[in-house]
Image (cartoon, rainbow, N blue to C red; front, top):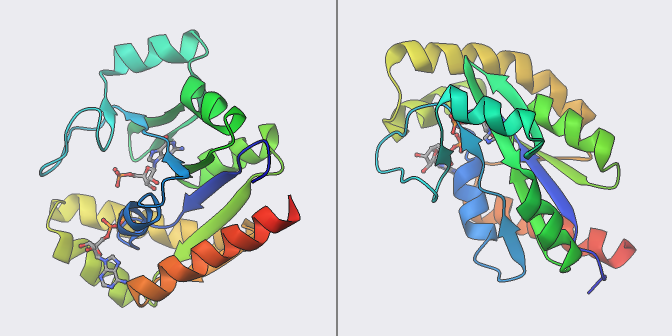
Length: 188
Ligand code: ADP
Ligand code: 5GP
């Protein structure tokens, strides 16, 4: 194992399956998932401190002022950010840290951590993306439309990532990402 852990950024449009893929990846004990903070409301069965740290705008802005974020961005009217300290501590302990964040956040991470590995997860098609977003059953129609519009803006950004993986079959997608990380670890 390299002395310092890898930083792995995973992005992709809403509904592409990032959360599902990451849940599989973190079953491997060496991975640590950065739990983001957000000002959006919890949805479905989401719990504070598990999927996200749910904060008010005031709390989030206080953390921005106190330099508490490794990166943060606004997405569809809410703040999302990666708390700084866990990311730093884990990589120094030699853990591979996964940041599941949107494209602006990835651009910021690349500036401060140019050796991070960036992976963009694409859906097989826009139709499948819409189907998955609806099937998840967590969004209002308005939110689905906003996320699909945002997806059309985000998809061309895939070219800026080190790797693009298509999430067609879940198992294959997870395996492909594990292979990418394995080969990157051999390089480091
Ligand atoms: P994201 O985190 O990118 O917004 P999710 O992980 O919530 O996406 O996945 C969106 C929906 O698609 C969920 O209902 C999930 O179970 C489903 N899903 C994820 N990957 C696949 C796949 N490979 N095939 C079919 N459905 C999938
Ligand atoms: P959702 O509301 O669907 O959970 O997330 C919306 C978007 O915010 C997704 O693209 C997700 O990857 C992104 N996101 C989640 N946490 C962070 C974060 O800490 N920073 C940034 N920049 N984006 C995040």
